[in-house]
Image (cartoon, rainbow over all chains, first blue to last red; front, side, top):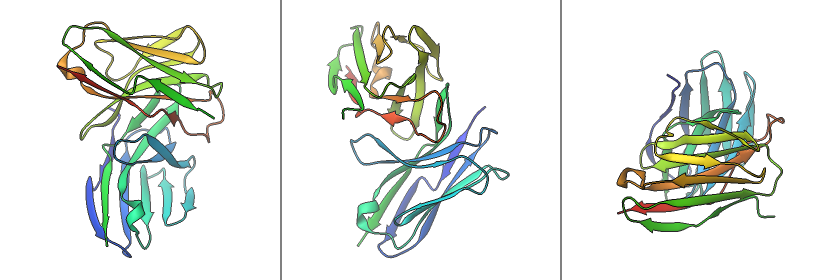
Length: 110
Length: 114
C-alpha cells in the first residue's frame, strides 16, 4: 500500500528557532512535492523535488530529497510567525494524482 | 488570471439529496483531479481525468461520479448524499508533460450533509 508519512503531525515552536519536518514515502516514483495550507484556504505549492539529492530553498524554508532513503525534509530556519500553517508533503504527480501525508500543523509563537 | 475555480464554495445538503460540484480551469491543463480533505487525514484522491471524455477512480471513489465533457471542466456528482461525505472538496489540475510543475488547486468547496 502506498503511504506517505509525515512527522511530526503537530509542532509548536518559538520564533527564531530551527526545525525539520520529515516525510517518508513508500514508492519509487521519486517525485516529491511540498505544499502549504493556511486555515480555510487552498494549497499553495512550495517545492517540487524531482531527483536524488535535490535541494531547493525559498526564504526560510529549504526542502531536500533522498530517494535512496525515500525521505524528504522541510527545514525551517529562524522561524517567524508568518510561517505558521499546515505543511503537506505529497508523492506522485503523474496522471493518477498525488498521495498526501496527513500534514504537519505548525504553530510558531513569539 | 483565474487558475482553478470551484463552485459553489459552501453548500449544506440533506441526506439523500444530490448535487454537482463544478471545477473549471483556464490553464489548458490536460489532467484534472478531485480530492477530499478530512481532519487528520490529509487529502485523498476521489477521481481523476487525463483528458476530455476520460475519467478514472482514485483512492476513495464510492458514492461519487464524475464527468469531463470539456477539457476545462471537471464535474463531481453526489447522487445520494450521506453524512460521511461531509468534507472539503478540492479540485486540482496539471499539465500532462512538464513534470517540474505542481498541481494547481482551487479554493475548495465546503460541503455539509445533515
